[in-house]
Image 1 (spheres, rainbow, N blue to C red):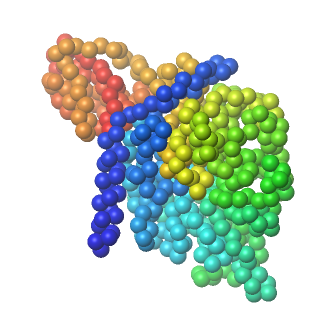
Image 2: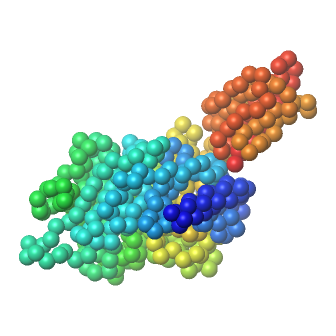
Image 3: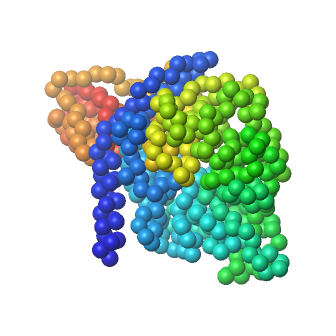
Length: 475
C-alpha cells in the first residue's frame, strides 16, 4: 500500500511541476517555401531545457484528438495504465485519465501504444512480447471515464505439430476506418529474423467485429480466435535490410496501402501483398539522415499533399531527433518531393530512445487552411507547429475574433489567476477561444474560472463606459 501511495504522490507532483513551467518557443525561424510556412506554437524538450519526460513517465505512444494530445502511459509494478491529456494549443497538462481495472487483464505489459481511428475512437494496445503466450489486445477507451471495450484479443495458435510458433512481438499498431463499423487494425512484427521479423498482421473489422482471417484453434473464452491476415514484406529500403527490426510502426493510408517504418529502414509505401510500391529510392537526397527512429504520416491541405517522417535519430550532432516535412506533389509520390522544413532546427534532444518512438501527429484544420503538427520523441520531448500559407498561419496563432478589438481602458484591468481571470471591477465578461468561438459569459462578474488554455477575454464595465480585451494563457 505504501508503495502505491508513493507512486501516486510522485505522479501528481510531477504533473504539477509540468504545469508550472512557462511556455517556451522553438527559437528557429523556418523560411516560407512556395508560399507555405511552418511556425512553432510551443515546445517542451531536452534542447529547450523544459524536458517533460519526468511528468510523462513510461509513455511510448502519442495520439491527437480534438485539439488535445493523448499520451498512453504505465507506472509502477504492477503497472497502472492511464492516459495523459495535454492542450494542443499551449502544451499545458489538462488531466490524467486512469484506465478501468479490467482493461488489459492478462495482457502482460499494458498500455504501450495509442491511436485514434477515423471516427475519433481512442484505442490503446499492450506490448505483446509473445502473441502466442501473452496475446495482443486492443481496447477502445472512453477518454472521459477510462472505461474500456475490448476490440481485439489475439492469441496465435500452436503449429499443427503441437510446437509453439516462433516468438512474435508487437510494439505498436495502426488503424484505418472506424472500429465501431468497418476498418482494420495493423501491426508490424518486431525482429531481425526473416520469416518472422518481416511480417505484418492485419485484423479486418466489419460491422464492429473482427473478421477471422487465419485458420486456427477453436474459439472459446480461453482461446479467442481473433486471428489476423499475415502479410510478408517482399523488399525494404535500403534494400540490404532483411526485416522490420526493433519497434517498427505501420501507418495505414487507405484500404490498399500503408507505410512501414522499421529500425534499419526508411519509411516506405506497401500494398497489402507486401510489395514495395514507393520509397526514398526515388528521392535519395531527402532520405532520412539516420534510420533507427520510427514515425511517419501524410496529409493534404488546401489541395496540396505532404509527408512528415523521422529524419534524424539520437546520434545526430546538429539536430538529434528531428522530422522532415516535404511536399509530395499531386500524385503523393516520393519522386520529385520537395523539402519544406527540417524541424525542430536543433532537434528535440539526444536522450536514448530504445523504443524508437518518433511520432508526427497531424490535425488538419480545413476551415482555417492550416495543419497543426505535433511531434514526440520518447524521453526527449514534444512540441506543436502550425503549417500553411503565412497569412493563415498568423491568423490561427494570433486570431482576432469578430467584434473584439485591442482596446484597453486604464481603469478596467484583466489579470490572470491560477484558475482563470479576474477583472478589476464588476463587468460583463465574455471569453473566446482562439477560433473566435464564445465559450463563457458572465454578468456583473469579477472572476471567471477557466481550464488551462489560450483565450481572448473581453470585459465591459457595468455602465458600459470602460472596455478591455486581453489575450491570456491559463496554465
